[in-house]
Amino acid sequence: MDKLAIFSGNAHPELAKNICKYLKVKLQDAMVSKFSEGEIRVKINENIRGKDVFIIQPTCPPTNDNLMELLIMMDALRRSSAQRITAVIPYFGYARQDRKDQPRVPITAKLVANLLTIAGASRVLTMDLHAGQIQGFFDIPVDHLLAVGVFIDYINKLGLKDVVVVSPDVGGIKMARAYAKRLGANLAIIDKRRISPDKAEAMHILGDVEGKNAVIVDDLVATGGSLLEGAQALKRAKAKTIWAAITHGVLSGPAIENIGASKDLEKLLISDSIPLEDHKKHPKIEVLSVAELLGEAIKRIHNEESVSSLFD
Image 1 (tube, rainbow, N blue to C red):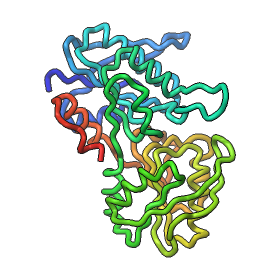
Image 2: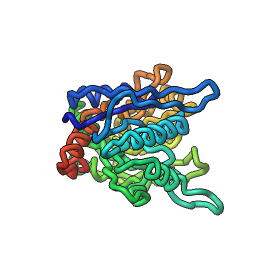
Image 3: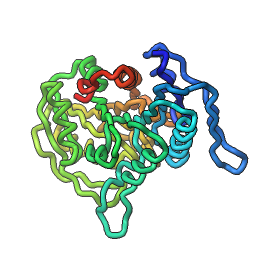
């Protein structure tokens, strides 16, 4: 492991430290700050010539700052003769802008993929993309991990009986099926209509949820509007309890207030792919760590071993 070097920007240093703790390596030293006028300043304080470098940097809010830090760090590492640079992006920002769903709009996820490649990324390690097809936007290898195992372990410890896994829309069926298979549970789908980019209206429940413990699974929760609409629809359909297991807790706008005020949602489980700020902490929100999952993937990539078992 002497050729392995792990760096972190300012997006989520705690996750980087936990990954290093799992791997039993030191987090490498780099200065990532800003000049007085706001430009990002980077200096690598370690000799990384010929090393296999991993940068832990989710592109979560402030998205643009964190993305620019990542790009500039990769440029600095490339110019410092790193052998290989892997961008470890637990949460891939701009992933929702993955297609032209209206005239005259960009495909920003593709633009970000191009920027990462040009900046010097040799490969990308990410988790629970909003759309799996984003992997095809890259011309470099992409390892796409799933956090399902982390959530399943927690749900099993709860000892819930009569579980039904609920997809919040038709597009999330694949993820929901992965949960249902591991839990040995049935599957249900919320049929919803999107009113605006941030608001959706739940319509019907496809599947039997009456008297069952429902677990809504999704890749991200932003304002929480869709989640709480779904929870209300499930309660109207006479679900016994309603839980949510959502990988990326963006929790923007009034999300915390809405989740805290909800009488339908038992608890929201999120991963630490995005740091949960102190003012966003709430008894209804449980954060599960994906440090071991990411650390194991980094170890296998570094040792040129198969990581396919981690995709399941």
